[in-house]
Length: 320
Image 1 (cartoon, rainbow, N blue to C red):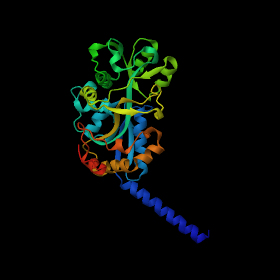
Image 2: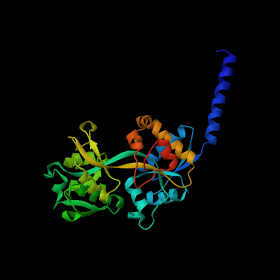
Image 3: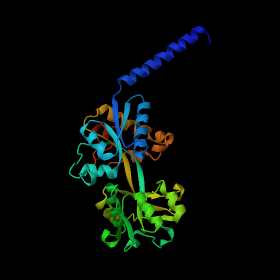
């Protein structure tokens, strides 16, 4: 390449770089709230922030907190702009229940759903328990003092099988992880847990586990959602390679969602929703933390959680 061509190329590159800097300088800054560093929640928020920043349309920062009771009120007030959070925590925040009792966060709006988090009732394979109805009279991990937002999901899972909490023996545990430990140790017969949680393989190696199938009939789903309104059923297939679920089955799921507050610029909300809607499949392919995102999940509406108007338009959602 001649000196003139080199100079021309350098000028062009410099112009492109300057244009990118100018675009980023003019782009709105979106302040993410997240759980503590090292947590799954921090990983999801950090991955989203980096994804949005890489488009050049949004600048992002991420601030870590101890948990949703710390950061959702800041998003609700507009002191921070967005946060990815699981629906159990968000449901409590919206209703003013659980750890948000008496302090509802009514100004939160949905930017987009992100991806499902499947959960289910874990039992030992040799327990003779093959359905949720079989849990009557059995010991079920309960309380979840460290994860109070998940307790309705235990009750909702039981309700799907026509079982009330009065029908089982409630064994207090601090968290769902402690419930798995108690299952392996023989102190409980069933516990709620994430199908892809890190302790599943450990529990299966120690005690050989199975997941109880959920009843997909409308009446059973209605019973479940009467207790856990944000829950829905998700199909699990053998090709999903879920430990403890070798046959096709339905299980409970809830979503990770991205929410915003009342002061986030409409242009920033629209840009985030548009990026997820148009590039979600590619983002999922390139980022393991966000790998379960699908176009269907991203555009999922919620009756109890309205979309931000700018997001609703970008996602082409007609209801909600």
